[in-house]
Amino acid sequence: MFTKITQFLYVLIAVMSVFILIGKDTSQAQAPHDSPSYLIGPNDILSIYVWKEPELTREVTVMPDGRVTFPLAGEIVAQGQTVTQLKKAITQKLEKYVTAPEVTVIVKESKSQMIYTIGKVARPGPYPLISSMTILQALSAAGGFTEWADQKNIVIVRRQAGREIQIPFNYKEFTSGQNLDKNILLQPGDTIVVP
Image 1 (cartoon, one colour):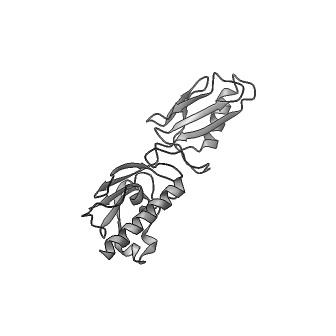
Image 2 (cartoon, rainbow, N blue to C red):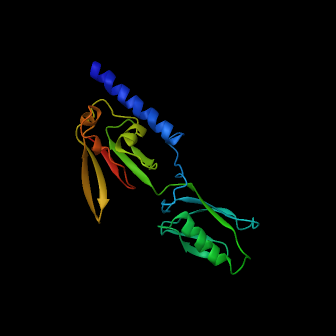
Image 3 (cartoon, rainbow, N blue to C red):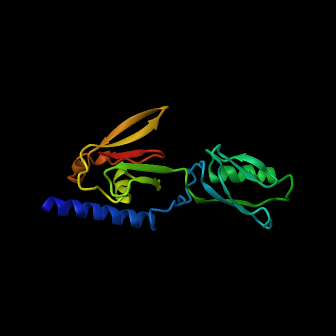
């Protein structure tokens, strides 16, 4: 009984810390903080503003091929670029038609940076990858474990260099203070498997 209460308290603390970190419901994709290193990807929703040109201001979704279509600029590769790089590319293309264009690009919704949870968690499925999200935070976002979850044999499946690798994570050891370095930062596309 004591271990169930302890486990519940650990999960409750983790859930509360995730809500504090992200500041809103985890079921909605959230744009990253103004991170200069955020790379735009397919399905991201961008707000592009052109000062004093309301007919050019709009929201665009990055297409699966990584491009956006923008008036007067045509198709522009957005995937793999930072907001600053995309702003510069749009500005250069608009200079042919608009005098000194002032362009602002904002990632309204990050839909390309996702992680996945499957197996014996309360709410399996895709979740937005929040900046500096760890395994424990992702498990918390997924609602914690179901009753028969094997908390000692969790696996993170990650695609690296064209192949999949498996990274083990033992929740029981982590919560008892062992192997604290195993609570790694997640990367886009990681899948957490709870058997």
